[in-house]
Amino acid sequence: MASAIDWKLLDHAAATPVEVGDVVSADAGGMPIYRVVALAGGQVWLGGDRDATARVMPLERFRWRGGEAMAGAAA
Image (tube, rainbow, N blue to C red; front, side):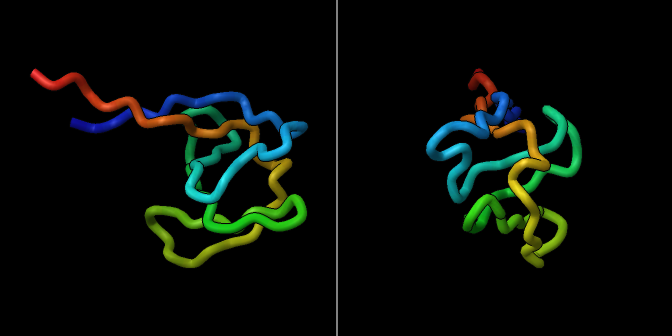
């Protein structure tokens, strides 16, 4: 069963708005969704499921951070 992402508004003023391994998006549940692979000075290096090439973007471009994946209920 597929997992859903629990989206939270990204707090840009927080000491650590995102961490390596988090997923981010400009729109909650929207596409594309990127995984953070590195951070430095307000920039994030992003990897995607479809593209293995990391890209660098300003963190301010993203509004949503994916929380813990909610696993489907086991029957």
